[in-house]
Image (cartoon, rainbow over all chains, first blue to last red; front, side, top):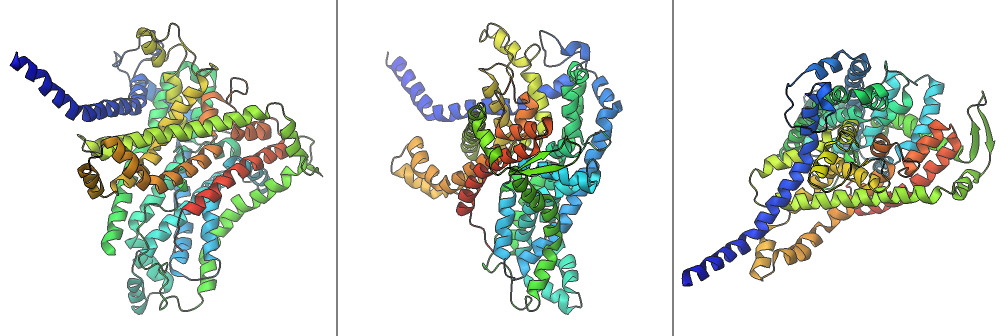
Length: 291
Length: 318
């Protein structure tokens, strides 16, 4: 009797100690399942022959597995042309943003001039503007300047939209580079801009990479600017063309092909994003080491 | 990238150590003012062309009547008539309610998930680093693809959600999640939370990790339970981060267009049309550009209110 009395007490104690932990793991498991499921389901569905996609009893691992949807996506001009455009627009936006932002960030980090505080506040405020409001006049202005339905127009818009963040982030990296290093370079015969390019920028490489990747991913995923500022697939990006394909009846009937295109379109962003994480962490650690 | 990664004022950079903004006098000797403006010139040029000028135009258009379809651009000054038109619109309360549902629901949902996950993953958990990395991947997924995948999951005829719920006996017949009046908003919000919580999660996690473990030890010695510790120590210390995140999230949701548009296009009817969608529909479906601009200005004034509150909270060093 005594033994059987002790057993539940021991079990109860064990339960009292572990229940919070167990509950935590159960909730964590449920959340992680919810977070990862869409990725896995998209992947699984995109590997299914179209005939097996619309089925009343979905299965995890379709048999036979097929790459036909990926072949379809890679041969489909309404996806592939915008996919290439996405690379062009995102890369050019990243380069343009980094160049403008580095110069401005340096100015804000190193120079004293009236109105500096106002400039920074204005940049923060700019980011809060509803894109939808500003995009109406942008559309009209672009039509007038013949920037409508062009790559430069799209790149310019993406650049403007990511610049404020890029300036502020780069500024914070430049601030942490010791001024003495620049002075040394200037003593050695560099111009001020030369010292900036040869000393400060390389020491802030983590920040430059982080900003480039950030802008690239932003332009990659944005569908609003292409929606308003372009009109045909020659200048559209894949974020928009995927949406257009979704809305068309042809896309709705070839959902596995669409999902394959979606997976292809997601891969560059996710891969870059992983490297952004590393760069940001590295940048922070490098900054603290220098102090 | 959904949400507002672009909105944090330089969150990741190292801190300004001497508070001087790095402007040490020996280098900053001459011509700083001219140089400063010169370096800022490209940024001013780009922002002026794509933000400043359009913003001015938008304000001007909102008090004019612009006919685009009449062949030539013809403008008549009508004062605040566009704003009055919106006030008289019988659907205006619906648009405002939809916007409120999206903003509050999206913000609240993202915050709840982010906080829960941050608390769970800040403790000792097997493979914590792996889960953390996994949890923020939705951030990198382009919103078009996010919506595409979720539309497939939520599909009324072939979606996996219907299948699972039907097999489990939770629903007795298949539901068209995104066109049902009851389930449309919960469905939109679940997708929105999925796409947007990582940003809050990352910030809350780093906030939690910044709290000194000694505080928790002291609380434990004093006999405080986990819940009490959380309410009395964790939440108060996270308060500044939480306030900034909620304000930021409000602004992000106010201006968000793509999420709802790709999922439901504002339908059924106008049931999920937020102000942001309304500006688009008015301006680019019906080409009533000046009326669209006026609604945009109303949207901006909400956004501005929260921006001011946000800027007052965020200390940015100059």
